[in-house]
Length: 552
Image (cartoon, rainbow, N blue to C red; front, top):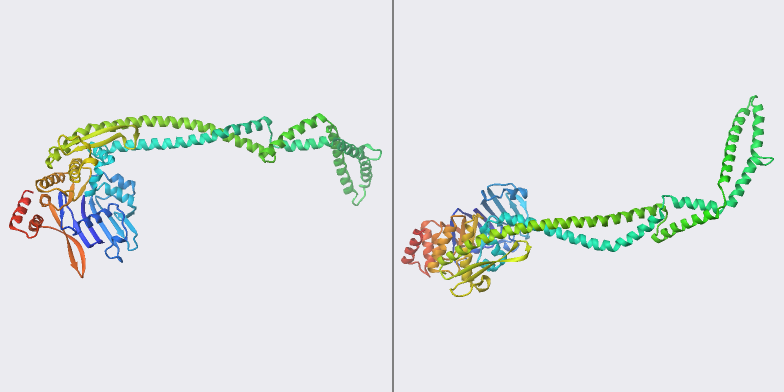
């Protein structure tokens, strides 16, 4: 619950501090005194956006700080999830600089407005006059039924399933689109791959074939050269090997003498060995060089196939063609794996959908079970509020497919008069009727103790006399389950409160400020008497004020 509010330099507020307690608190004051300004300041620490126009003194910082007692509302996980220090006395602070920059803090830890708003929604519900318009909203109506049914966990479980199902469906759509595009390429990839595979290309094959065909194409010239070389080395009458053998013999005889003869003999022997090996190598080459037109034709055709593939794919070399072959193989493998992935995700979607349908039925059953109770209690409260002939019904329509809130669409039906067919409440109820229905619904929801604090901003507009007293009774009853703060103009409601604050304006150095104070018992009597009187406070008004407070 809200225990303390401190406001500095906001709108007409120079500096203001208020302590709040449990039970029912009424905030009163003349029209224009600034009650809505205090509510606006409170809205800022609940996540509402603001700018430098909110500053009373434009050259100074605006600061709003609220202290909340949050023990017993299961907020520990929220603090843990947002890396915040949990404290049963939690402080939310907003600061707005003259430049219009805003900063927010929870227990002195800087946070963004989204986190502040999320925490604020779990601490306080502010009901303004304009909120009655949301009574006709189907989402609001569904939220009321869920609140009474205690469906928070069921809705969270359902939402997880729904979001997962939607995510998987989007992923499947993306995969199907990818598959459609891939299918258009699959035949083309397969044709290219089959063409490459049919050639059965080996790494380095092109280079080897080019060497072979070059030899075959020049076999005659090569054979002549090899034969001439062999003859010069070893076959002519006068040849290199015979001459070198003779030189070797000469230096073998000379090596007995001193000098370089031994070294020359060794070098001659070494060269002789090399030339004999060279001669044998040339002979072997000669044996392998043949003129074979058929082989030339075979290699030429093979090379033509390779050249055609290179030209087609704008590549060069066997290695590049083999890389393309591997790339095409991988692409086709991915297309095949894409089909498997689509099959698996489709199965996952089916499984999620079955779970989603089951959870939506559990949620629907829970909602349907509380509809009679909600209808009866709202009708009962409307009777207390002077509408004994009012009809309030709840229709639960079913959607064909699950939505993000389930398969139910809740419709509130209302008629203020007996014999008039009830219609959708947002279309036929007047402003005053909407206010009473909203109060009845809030009264019902308050019994669930879902929120620490509920604030009514002049929900009693259009209500007077005996009904005003009954509104006060309902508010007092609601305050048994939560902290209730009501901004009101009605003395009957103010008289029902446990505590009363007066909002007023003061003049200081030619400036006007809004301030607030807690009234003691005597001040309450006088203030309520003023609310009862048109101009001058009469003895009758004072007596009535005392009577209203004595009934508290």
